[in-house]
Length: 305
Image (cartoon, rainbow, N blue to C red; front, side, top):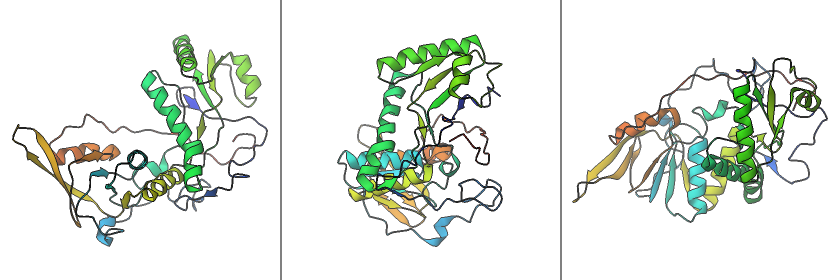
């Protein structure tokens, strides 16, 4: 059980007020709602057949002839990239998505955000991401990302893992991330529903939380387009034109799609599990391997947020 739920997310048993209450924020997602098969907030289950390629329906807006940057992929990484490009003042940024935003793997992610990682760079990056998701996007767009600060609890089923969590807690202190290594008894006091008989301890990070992936991407795209960026859905990329300059350096020249080409000197590959295929379009090897993953989805359990 501990291996299945390394990043078990639970919350205190007392009910909490929705983050949207009192903030004047609107919850805007992709229309996620309980499916006919399961009472979980996703539009479709993994067993449902995918729709035919959205490219056949035409792009959501006309393609520009040129762009300073083309971002390929409309999932979490692509939307975050476009948002930060726009916020940094980069003009002429365009995001291309082959179907709809989050239609790849982002729509069924768990939406967990925990701040402690072994790399100091990741700790800083995740702290920034938390500020964007929990505060900035709401202020900039009036949309709610579904952020819930329900804390993160990491399970140590052996002494080595507990020692690792102690190192993470020390790293967190250096970067201002509050965390606590708890004994099994302390964990039980914090989360009475939990079975702690086989645990050596836990790492508790009270300011971790969860978000709605579709709602977050919607807010990121809204904030980016408000600053002049463009999001074009239903526009599959079919190729990347590359030229060799006078110094023998290969440079991007254009992005080819089913609906035309965009001249650009810069491409950002944010295609997720399809990044290797996109890289091959420009003769670039992307060292990425897609792997199966799993998480448990249940009906709502009383006392757990």
